[in-house]
Image 1 (tube, rainbow, N blue to C red):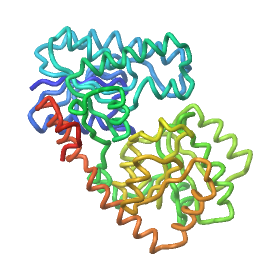
Image 2 (cartoon, rainbow, N blue to C red):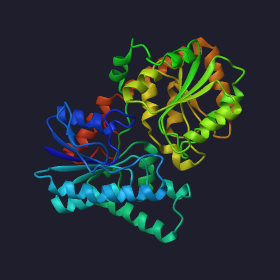
Image 3 (cartoon, rainbow, N blue to C red):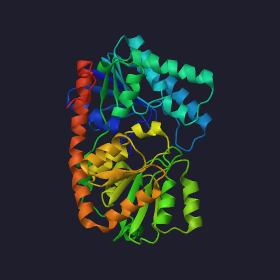
Length: 397
């Protein structure tokens, strides 16, 4: 089977490697996979994945207008590249943005082949509820487009139960929706074990400290400036440090605040490769995930959550939702109301000083990683691709 895989923000070595890891396993199952990517150069990976790039300029620091131009550029060129690709059997499209789903719809009609739509974030709900899109006519057009894509897709993959419930409320049949979360790649973590960090200053800064790590985008939606308030509150706890790894629109502002407040217990590193990020994270003691105080963001299924589990890190959240439930049911961490900074910090301080409690959460995190193993998730999606459907819309094991 020849699979045309479309992902504008495809990456092999940075944080969002889901499509790369899935493609490797599809190749192992005998498929021929062609990836249409927005970034980097066209190439063939050592596993045999053919990557064809539209070379669309894009980064997190771009203005709203420049991002729109990037989406249009990828939209047009991905259709052209898709049309040129011969003898494809199925099309697998992963969002965001929502316009990528329209690419899949158009190519599906042109090629007369089925397409599967993977929803990583429920658009346009998120930008509408966050106030990025306010024009009533634009909202109506985007919602119409969303439903048109859902109806045209052979099957829909969502990354959390919350996303599935969102689609069911929109009258999408349960039999058409399958949950396949992001995954824990424990083998990738194991490869970094025993390797010493090259950054000598970082090694010294982390030495004998309880380090809470947050890798990934440092943007408005992520609300990571929350950690500045936490660093201030825990400044008297010399053993607790906060480490951020990544880029984003809020990074410079955060760095300025850290300098202004003279906080020595919080540090921001530039974005690293996936391997380097896991190497650093596996030497930390806790992972954290943060979002703005908006209900729609609770349904996320970010890579970092599963990377923490792969590293065996207890996890603390500043929001509610399915991840809070999973963590607390398993004992691998806790979630708190966004406004409850004190309880969030108290939990960190508790694990930092109670070795037994930390060890129990550490073991629970490692057990939870097995439930989200990369091969299990990949097999679940492969069954959808080959069968054309899930099992009554429920997760496949």
